[in-house]
Every structure is written in structure tokens, then in C-alpha cells.
Length: 198
Image 1 (cartoon, rainbow, N blue to C red):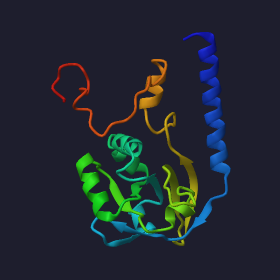
Image 2: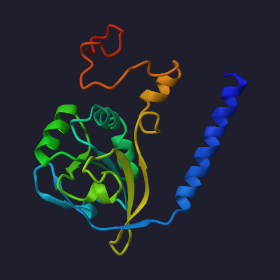
Image 3: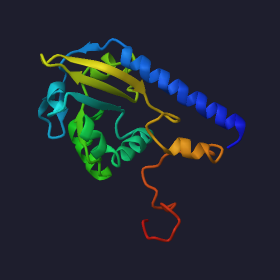
């Protein structure tokens, strides 16, 4: 690693530490006990999504029509068990319950998914614009002892964020070089090692 890269890497790590401190000091935002639809169409409250945890991480997902959101959600399969050991973990899709259920099953998503379709939840949380277009992001919530819910942090997600390793790995190659996520990598091969994974 050359000196400039080392200097910039340290600056990034220092900035992230400062960001963590600022997030920890930020005043939590009170949140209503929103109602979603489970993948079977039954109503489920935000409070119920915590399960036996005090904390919840919720992914704002645009739905099956977004290959980028799908790429991120596919990646969460490998981390869902570890995350759920610390906090409840849920993906909230903009699609209807059946579409959410079918798509989650087709992708092998091993975590809870709900539908926020028809709700103002995404808009209220800052992940839908005035024209009804959803945007991806992550919100963290805490359920207090009195049952009230607060949002303790939130961030948009997209290429270059901390939630998908694809982009920083490609940065080591000099960038993505025009690569974009796909729904299926079978035609291009998955690893190139001849292991038969595709």
C-alpha cells in the first residue's frame, strides 16, 4: 500500500469512527407502530417484528423490479443469521405480499420479509419521494420498556456503501468497469474455477 492510499484509508476509518460517535449521540426519532402485511397477507405491526429483541434493523427495499435492491438483499443472506443474533432483521418490500413472498422464496432469502405496499411508512421514513417512487435504505429501531418505538439511525444504500462488498472489491480493480447487478449469473458463470456452481 502506497503512502497516499494508507493516508486516505486512515482518514476514511477516522471519519467512520466520528460518524459512529455522532450517530450514537443523535436524539432518537419517535416512530408509530406501523402496520405492514406479512408474506401471507396477514397484518403485522412494527412492534411485532422485534420478536424477542429490543432492536430491529429494517431494510427499505424497492421491490423485485430493482436489480440493485435484489443484489443487496441477496447479499444479506450470508449475514442474516449473525445480524439476528444481535437484533431482529427484516426486509420491507414495496411489492404486495404475494409478490414479496414469491420473490423472496425464489431468491432464497433466509430472513423475515414484509410488504409495505399501500402504506405511508416508506414516505414517512424518507424512502419514498412525493411522486410515490421508493428509494432503498436501512433504518434501525429500538423498542423501549414502555413499548414505544424510536428510530436510532438511518442511511440510504447504493453503490459504494458499507452494506454490499461488491463495490469496494471492484474498487481494488480500479472500479466496476461498467458492471451492473443481474438477476441470474448462470450464463456468465459464477466463479470461473470449474467447480460446477453454475
